[in-house]
Image (cartoon, rainbow, N blue to C red; front, side):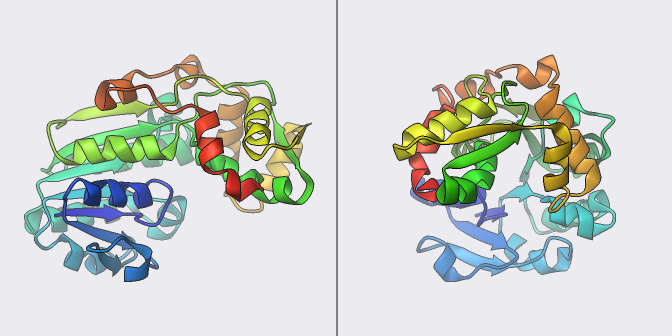
Length: 285
């Protein structure tokens, strides 16, 4: 039995499907989830990770846990590493042997950032101290972040973003899910994997890929940092906004590096951004 938290998100939904297709038993956990949200044969459990006790029924009889924590969790938990520590204590007490944590590349590349480095490091440390067999996944930027452009592309065939010609190797969330499925089965104890796409793409190039996917032109307008910051503050805490803008505007060499880990683990190259855009074209039409 494998427990998947964040089971209705961009990574979790695909991970649940992959595990079921591979013949695994799966319990899918999310704050709001019903049996209609998961494939047949999957057990669905509604639970908020800020309440470790709510997760205990899912852990009974489980062998492995995929642990995904969101920004909302970090904000609500107060002491997120302490909450994760209690979840992992419960998991070990119930016989769980293995945990795979979805962390962030920023733990290594932005260690001084309160939002990306320090909190992420504390969660990773909790996993390392858990007494479980652990694996940590550190993805860079998600291709699915581009869903933020869906409404303006549908309404006006236009997008606006800062740093239009700064490239990063965005990763397809489905590749993250495939890596998670591999590592949850064991054989990767004590390993940290950095997950990126196969090539750098800029915001301008990503807009062009979406245009090609929907078969219509999409206008691109480059924002100033101040304009982007004002928009992002409407739905993100200020520390997250500042570090995010630093990453997408002045990425470090490590953040621009294409990691070999996806190909090593899956035996193929990561999917390019254009493939993600084609697969999700309906969201932008």
